[in-house]
Length: 150
Image (cartoon, rainbow, N blue to C red; front, side, top):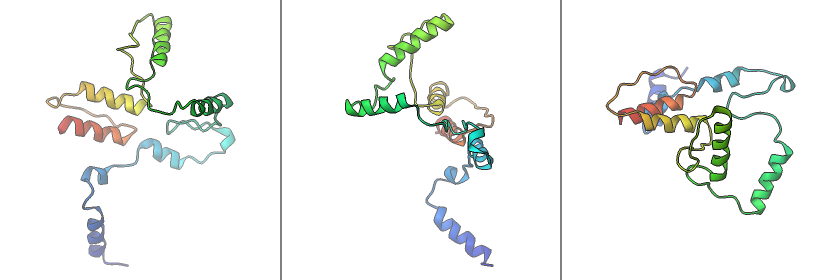
């Protein structure tokens, strides 16, 4: 068995230049569950990491091919496609009887993590205290701490 002091020194050399918060970061609960789940593929739909494990629908594949053919391969506007924001605004008005301006009050994100991150950044002031519950994504914790403390 190698000397434990020697192992500690090797570990310290390898991790020293890395930010201590990164070293302390634990795997998210979702990733841990994903590693533990042993399932027959035909008996479960996996939603643990934010993407469904079903085959991509043919219409989605065709839309992707068409977008590439039409050179629609660039980033969207910062708030997302206005046409999509208009559809979202119409949906909210129809089903919830609330009006939001698609031009200035609706923002489309790539997923829940980005939406939560932006919301936290918009609401937390560095002079306020913050109480955290256990988050599913450990990266949220470090983003919140970084934003609130620094």
